[in-house]
Image (tube, rainbow, N blue to C red; front, top):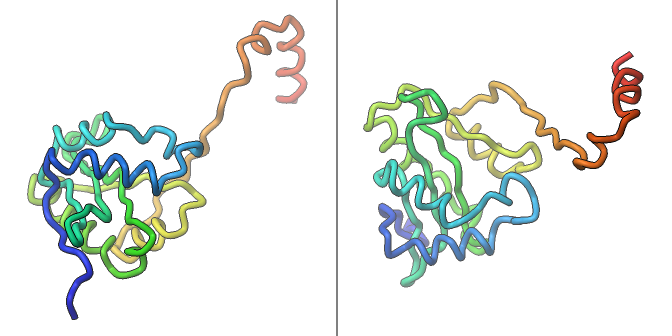
Length: 165
């Protein structure tokens, strides 16, 4: 069977198409996709270029994966942060091929563990991660603080004490 796209290492020439693909695929009004930006691409491409790949078809980038080391304070942990495929290319094993290339690069660079943070509602990415042997270790809830005006409210202490009772 012939692949519908070739997987190859990302280059700086791919950055404009990767940015556009992410803008088209991610809902940038929803967290964590709201952090999608040029600097998100640059961070991974600068830190671990061999772990960043694109899916290329008929002269165009149709998908990508961005990963790097370290992850937070874990110097030997890899982090797969961004993966996207244009809709016409989803469900055709390209995400698995992108992930395989990235994981091989991370482990080849000395990673002892590779993690991926996936939004709870992102069913496709969760299925992909499980198919690659990832296991869910923890679930984190993101809490947002109220407005500054609410925090300055004098009776806020009474509200907080009542809600904690």
